[in-house]
Length: 101
Image (cartoon, rainbow, N blue to C red; front, side, top):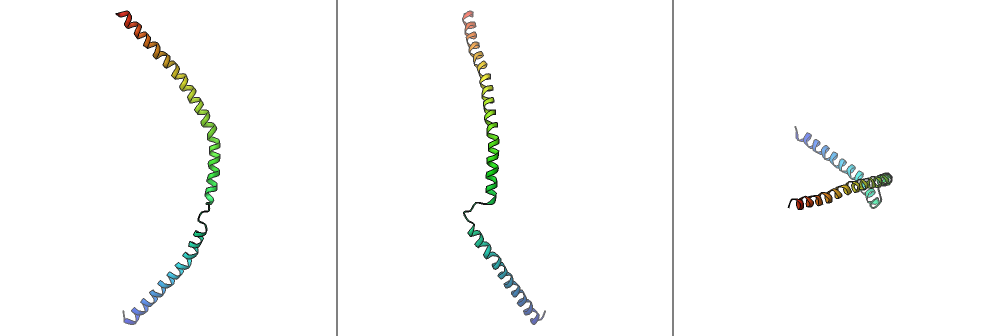
């Protein structure tokens, strides 16, 4: 390649690089200002998610409380006979030991 062509290619590439940098700056500057203006404001999605959270909690709270009462009732019912059988078997073993001695 001749010296003239090399200079022409370098000049063209430099011009394109400067034009690209200018366009990049023009695009990025307003975006940064827009982001700075919205700092501290809630997003649109936060409004949707809080509404969904409230709805889901309203549905799940009664179910959770009902299931909790059922589980506690079943647990208490199962625990009472087990406790009485443990105490009766304990006294039965003492009676057996005293009778054998």
